[in-house]
Amino acid sequence: MKEFMMLFRHVPNPNYQPTQEDIAASIKQWQDWIGGIAAQGKFMSTNQLGYTGKVVKPGNVITDGPYAEVKEIIGGYIIVKAASEEEAVEMAKGCPILNEGGHVEVRSFMELDL
Amino acid sequence: MNTNELIPNLFRTEYSKLVAVLCSVFGMSNMQLAEDIVSETFLLASETWSKKGIPDNQVGWLHTVAKNKTRDHFRRQKIKRDKVDPDVAYMTETSTEQAFDFNDEGIQDGQLKMIFAICHPSIKEDAQIALALRILCGFGIDEIVAALLSNKESINKKLYRAKQKLKDQQVKFEMPPEDAIEERLDTALKTIYLLFSEGYYSANIQETIRKDLCLEAMRLNLLLCNNEATNLPKVNALLALMCFHASRLEARLTPDGQFVLYDDQDRSLWNQSLITQGEFYLNRASIGENLSKYHLEAAIAYWHTQEDSSEKWEKILQLYNYLLQTEYSPIAALNRTYALSKARSKKEALKEAKKLDLTKSHLYFSLLAELEASIKGQLGYLEKAISLTQSDEEKRVLQGKLDQLKNRD
Image 1: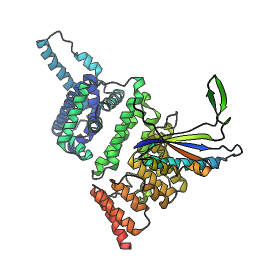
Image 2 (image 1 turned 120 degrees about the horizontal axis):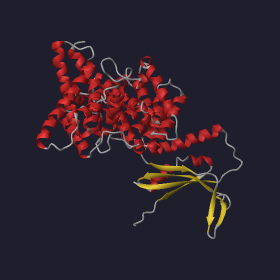
Image 3 (image 1 turned 120 degrees about the vertical axis):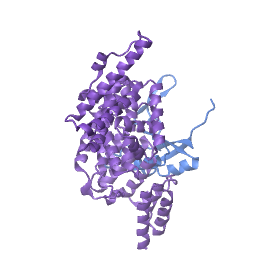
Image 4 (image 1 turned 180 degrees about the vertical axis):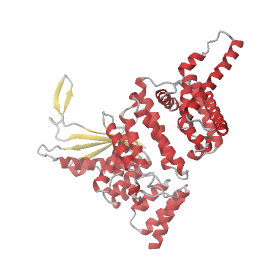
C-alpha cells in the first residue's frame, strides 16, 4: 500500500449563497465518500481549508491569498492508502467536488532515502 | 438461603472487595497472599456456617476473619524476622489495624486502585481480562474458563504470569498521578469494554455468565463515574454505550439461548430503564471538547434504541462515517455498510460492500446475502458464510435463513 494525496481544486463562486440545507447535504455527500474510503481501512487524514489566508513571498512581501492571483483554489485534501495510482484514481472518481464544479488532483508521495 | 447458595453469592460480591482492601495493606507485589487469605476466609465460612449456622452479619463476619488471619500472618512474620534479623523493619500490628479500611469508602478506594493496577499497560490484554475477572469481579476459575471459552490450565497460567508481571514491573497499588489519569483510563476503559463484549457478543457462553460479565463491566465503569478524578466525559460515554447495549440483553436471546437478530427482536423486551440511564450518562458525557470513540459508539447505540425512521439510519450512517475515520475496525465497516443500505438503498450498499476486503469473515458474506437482490446470489453468499463461521449458534441462524430461502424458491 502506498499513500496518495488528493487535492480538491475549484473556482469559488462569490455569488453562491448556500442555505443550511445545502450545506448539510454537501457535508453528507463528503462524509459518505470519506466514510466509504475509511470502511476499506484506507483513510489516513483529511482537512478542509479555510477560504482566506496569506501568501508569503521573498523580500517580506505578504499578500492576501489565495484569491489575489489565482482563480482556482485548493479547498481541502485527503490522504489515502491505495495499492496503486489506478486504485487511488478510482477512489477519486467518487469525490463530491466533481459534482460541485471542481476537480481532484491525485498525487503520490515522493519516497526519499534519507 | 442455605450455605451452598449463600457462599458463592457472597464470594462474587465480597471477594474482590476483600482482596482490594488487603492489597492496600500488603501492596500489589503480595497480591497472592491477599488472595490466599481471602480464600481461606471463605473456606472457614463454609465450614463454620454449615456447622454452627449462618451469622446475621455475614459480611462483617468475613471482614473480622480476614482481619484476624492477616494479623496472624504478621505475627508469624514477626517471629520469623525477630529470629532471623531483629533489626529489619516490619509492619506492626497497630499499623495493620490502621491500614484496614473496611468501610464503603475504603472498599471503593481499594477497588479503584485495583482497576488501575490490573489495567496496567505492561500486562497483555487477554491476561488483563482474566485477571480482572478474578480480582475485580470475583469470578471463580471455572467461571473464567466458561466466560473466556478457554481451559483451566491456560487460565491459571495466564493469571500466574500476569501476577508475576505486576511484581516484576513493581506496579503500585495507588491512583495514577493526575497528569497520567487520562492515559491510564484509556487502558482501563478498553479492558472494561472488552469484558462487556466478551459477555455481549460471544456465542456459546452460558446465559448467567453472559449477564454477569456485562453487569460486572458496568459496575466497574460506574466506580470510575462515581469518583471525581476519573469522572471524565469518555468514562460516562462508555457507561452510556453499555447501558444501551445491555437494554437488549433480554430481547436478543430466546429462552433456550438462541440469538435473535436486531430486526426480529420483540421491542417490548427492551429494558426502558437501562435506556433512560444510558441517556443520562450520554448527557453527562456531552461536555468538554474531546469526542472519543466511545461517544460515537454510544450515540450509535442510542439511535439503535429508537424506533425505525429514515432519520435514525441517516444518523447512524453519519456516526459510522466519523467512527471509521477515528478508528477502523472490520465490524464498524460492515455496520456502516448495513446502515447505508437502510438510509439509502441495498443497491448502493452492495456496491460499497464489494469494495471491502473482508473475504475471510462470515459476517461479510452474511451482509452480502442481505444486500444481494437475486435469490441465487443470496444462496451462494449464505453458503459461503456458513462455511466460514466457527460458531454452531451462528451456523444455525444462517442455515435457517438458507432453508427459508430455498423453500421460497
